[in-house]
View 1 (tube, rainbow, N blue to C red):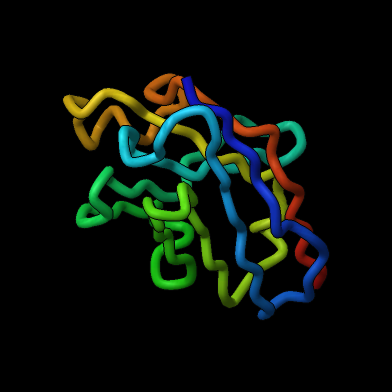
View 2 (view 1 turned 135 degrees about the vertical axis):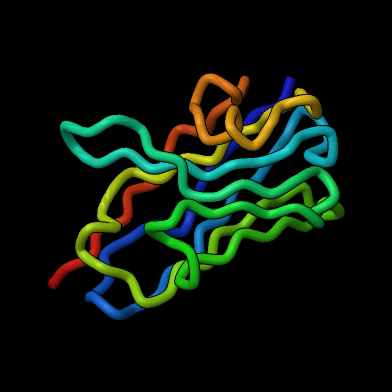
Length: 128
């Protein structure tokens, strides 16, 4: 079992940048594909990005493509989300999540129930 902890959230003006980190403990992160999700008040949890175990396969939602970059450092047991050109609609609690199943298809991995382990979330607020 792996424990996840996000950090790096905060308040930023529109057009600014933030870098979120997700630190893992309890088990090596290289055993999991990793995803970032976000949830705004009153809305469902939304897929943001995913990175494969090796880091060679990456997938983004259309809403963040070209602005956000997901990466991982298995040696440091960490995953990152670099967020640039932030917009007010990016305001949400951001969660990292671990998926231990290598057979999941791309259609499945955008769903929260594809992930077994979650962090507690970090708040990102973008002011206009």
